[in-house]
Length: 201
Image 1 (cartoon, rainbow, N blue to C red):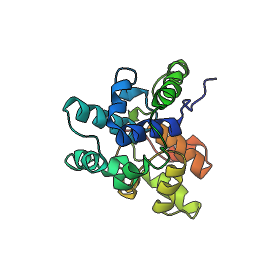
Image 2 (cartoon, rainbow, N blue to C red; image 1 turned 90 degrees about the vertical axis):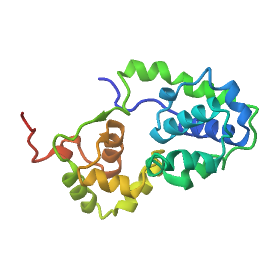
Image 3 (cartoon, rainbow, N blue to C red; image 1 turned 30 degrees about the vertical axis):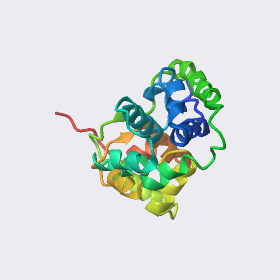
């Protein structure tokens, strides 16, 4: 039976992004080795793609500019907001070893492929699991803020508004998020779909 959790190293992902912000020249040694799809964390993947775009446009890769990049697309909440971007440099004490962390990320790629695909792929909510997600959350006496905080601790950045949209059934859910919800709520996958029937055209 194949493991559902894709091997990843979220600290390595954040360190690489932090190095690029601290020293923009770091991306020169990274861009040809690392593709956005190599990132496990959705926010990290999007931020790295933004950094590559800024680099190609000869623009500085700085926290305010990255924030503006996403704000202009109304996607700042999708990557955890300004707070998450600012946190990327918290653990960076030097950028000389950025290549080491790039290698850590790349080593996980073959394992991810072997496991059978990209767990960050979205699935469409043709049935609304949001009501069940809300019910299971409340059963654990958790608020929406509690959920996004626990997601953050597991390496997944999500705003409360984005989480609320999932519960409301107006935002598609990543498979990897469902895996994390299962871990946080300590339930079987079947409980997310309890009482639901598929829509048949």
